[in-house]
Length: 497
Image (cartoon, rainbow, N blue to C red; front, side, top):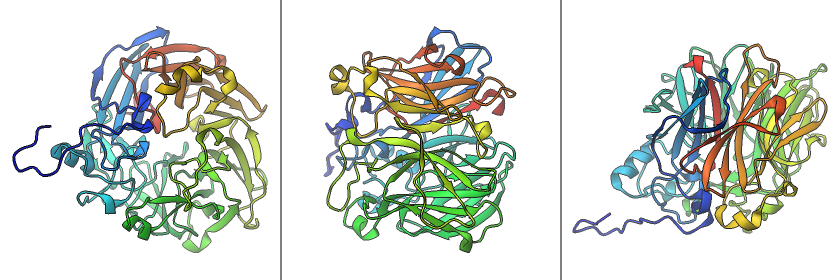
C-alpha cells in the first residue's frame, strides 16, 4: 500500500517468515464460491447437509511478529453436499477487529487475548475463529473470550454480535457448547466471565427457542483456561487446563497464558439443574493437560464416567512456563482416558484414569445423538509415524505451531478395537465429523468426513469414509486451494436450515 504524504507509520505488507505462517500454514485469505467440486469416487445420495468449519486465517500481517497460529481472523468454510455433489463457500466473519483492520489497511490487534498490546481500543475483542455451530436458526461463530457472532447459514453473511436478545449473562461464551439430543437445549458456560483475569465461571443453558434458563456462577480455584467441558443427564464438568492468566504480566506486554507445572488438573462438578454456587466440587489430579472431551455419562452406580484426551506435557507449547521451558512438540503424546468420579461421596483426589485408547490422539468426535449417554463409538485424529508418512519429503512444507496427525481412528469402546484410515504418505488430517446414515440408524452407523492436507499437491481435500468400511474412502473431494488447519467444525443436516 502506498503511503499518503504525511504518513508516519509504515505498513507491514509481509507475513513473518516463521513456521506458523509458512508451508500449509500460509494464510489462505480467500473469500468466494466454487460450484461442483471435483469428486473422486461416489458420494451417497442420502448425505444432504453442510459441513461448516472455521480456521484462524489472518487477513493482514500481525502486529506481534511471533503471533500464535490461532490468533488469526475467523474464516468460515461451508461444504454443501446434496445429490452426490459438493459446493464450497468461504467468508470471513466481519468482527469489529476484522472490519477496523480492513479499513485501516494494517493490523491493530495485538497479542493473543492481551488488550494492553492493541494499537487501539476494541469494544469486543474477538476473532470468532474457534468453532461454528448451528442453533435455533442461527449459525454462530465462537471464540471463548467473547459473545458469539451470528451468520446467515445460507450466505455466510455476518449479522453481528449475538447476545441471545440481551439475555447473555457472561462476558464470554464457550467455544464448545453441548447439545442435549433429547431436549434440544444448548448447554454453555463462560470462564473469565467477568473479564480478563477473573476466576469467575458462569454456567447457563438455552432452551431450543432461545431462552436462557439455568444460570449458576462459580469461582474457579485458579484463573485457568477451560477450553472444553462435558455434560451428563444430571451433571456438568469443567476441566481446568493449568495455563494461568496474570493481569500484571499482561500489562507488561506478556502473554495471557503461562503454563504452571505446579498446578494440578482440576475438574469442577455441579448438578446440571437447580445448582447453587456452593454446590460445586473441585476434584484434582496431578499436573497434566486435558485435551478435548469425547463424552460423559452416568453408570449404573450413579458415578460420572468422563472420557477425554490427557497429556502429561504442555500441549500449547508456544506458551511456556515461567522459566521459558516448553516441551518439544514431537514429545507431546495424548491418550484418550476415562475418569470415574463419584460426584456425591467421592474424595477430592481423583484415581488414576483408565487408558481406553493408547495412540497419540486428539479431536474426539462421537455420534452426537448419544451425547450425555453411554456410547460405544469414537472418531478422532491420530499420529502414528509407523504408518509410513514421508516426513523427510514433506517437512519443509508442514509449517508449524499446531499438532500434526496423519490418520483418522475409529474406536469401538466395547471391544477396544481401533480401525485406522491412513490417507497417504504425504497427507495430514484435520478434525473429523460424523454424519448418521439416517435418523433411525444405530449408533456409529454412518459416515466420517474430514479435511485432509495434501503436501504433495499443497492443496486441501475432503475425505469421506463409510464407517462400515473405514479403511478406504468412499470419495475424495478435491479443492482448488489450501485451507489452513482449522480448529473446529460441525455437520448440519439439510433439513435444519
